[in-house]
Every structure is written in structure tokens, then in C-alpha cells.
Length: 357
Image 1 (cartoon, one colour):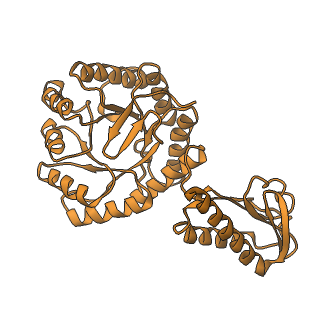
Image 2 (cartoon, one colour):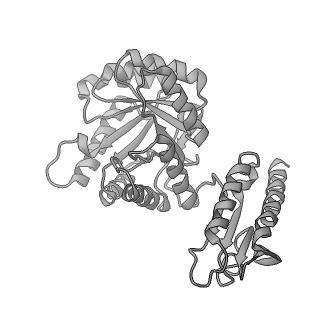
């Protein structure tokens, strides 16, 4: 069961409550270069980003916020460090949400900004990172105590449109931080593993950290942080949500790893199916609801893949086509893909018709 939280409006969507867990992105080009920034934002929207965060380093850069809001259909978040003046300027420029790090802005300087945020009803993310707090002893305890202390301060200023994040580069520490804070407040959580890095370990940290929390019902929005393109971060974020069974962004292709029993070119068939599915899924949104299986032999399919809407199971230079575990026919390896493609299009068309009725 998903953790019960407040439902916070952010631009044209909500975070928390019964709203779907959303995927955020952060731009990685200079904010001052408006056209380059705009192009990256457009690519991120196309890749599936549902909120976009931009760094604000100067007051001049806040001018890009209204420019982007005219061009981009998703909420724009201003990421602020060190300066309450920049936070105020970003809010006045129309940012849909402000991320502030209470670890690097003194409280006496935050008061004016918080008063303005309350009056304008602008949501804030209380973004607490392990590298921005001073502590001795337990990092986890310091993170949670800092979050609780900051929450009280913000609430004392009348600010309660809040989303919270507690990020460290360590999966166990980050997960435990969220566990402890979940017992102490009902604000929505922004999930992520900060400074995860690049490559398989970095991706595994994000999948394990974010995914384990989501499976426990904790988390309302997420941002994957990799030393990679932001489009790749969005793709991994979507994959995590789909693997957790929370949302569907694309059709699921089930395929076995292959073994000594395989007598067909399994890798080639999986690649062809994946390419075809990616090509037609943009035209047929109903396709994202489908499960498609490509199995190397009769052991793995259609029996083990009977949950698939449609699938292929390899034999000796042949594939058996099946749907929901029932055999439709057997075809030579060269013809099997074409037969599968026809059934995929037919099923996807039916799902589209059902969705529209």
C-alpha cells in the first residue's frame, strides 16, 4: 500500500496523494544559453520528463523561466543554492516550484523568501543532501533530524506546500533516511540517489534505492542522477516505475536468456521485435499495455510466458506463435517475425479502440 501523503499542486500536475509517481529531469546545459536550454528541454519532454528542473546561478538566468514556460508544457522547477535572493527572483519569474537546500542558506535569510512563497502559494522542495549538512556520528540521524528541524521552521513560517528529499550516494543510508522520516510526517517524498556516478553500478544504485522504496509504497516523484545524458536518466526512471508495477510507459518484452536448447537466432529476433515495437508504439498508445514474449525454446514458452498477450517460442529453425499461452501456429524462422508483427498491430489496435470507447 502506498504511503498516505498530502497532495501538492505543481504547475499542471500534482505530487503526492493519489497522483501517479512522476519522473523529473534536470537540464545539463548552461541556463543562460536559452536556445540550447530550450532544445534540451524539448528533448526531455519528448523522452517523457514530466517536470524539468533548471539551475539558477544569477538573477539574469531567472529570465529564462517565463521563456521556457511559454514553450514547454511541463512544470519548470528552479534549483537554488546559497542565495535567498535568487529563490525570490525565480519565484517572481514564475517558477512552478523552487528547490532550496536549507543546508546552505541561513535561516534568517530564508524568512522573507518563505513569506513570499506562502503568499504566492508556490510549492517548495526541501532538498537535503548528505554533502550539505554538518554532523558528528550517524549521518542518517543527522539527515532525519535536519529534515524534521527544517520542516518545523518552514511550518512556523506558514509554509506547508512542501516536498522533501533526503539524498546520499549510499543506497542503505538513503533508504533508511526515508524510512525514518516517513514515520514522522505526511509530506510527499522526492526520491533519488545523489552522485550515483556512471555505468552499471550507478544504474544499479538508482534501481535498488528508488525501486526498493517504491515497492514499500514510499515515494511520490523521482529523479535519477547519473553522469549521463538527462534523457537516459528519464528512461531509467520510467523503467524503474514500470518494473515496480506502478506505471506503464512502453510495452514489455519478455525474453529468456537463451541456453544450449536454443536452435533459433534468439538475439536477432528480440532485436527485431524491440525495434518494431518502438517504431509503432508512438502511433498506437495502446501498445504500451501489452506484454510480448520471445522465448528460445518450448521450455520457456508458451507455458512460462502464458501471461504474455502474444509471443514466439523457438524450435528447430522455427518459431511457434502463441497468445495467452494458446498456440496459434508454427512458422519458419524467416516468416515468424512478420506473423508476430501482424498480431501485435491487431492487438494494439483493439486496445486503442477499447481505450477510446
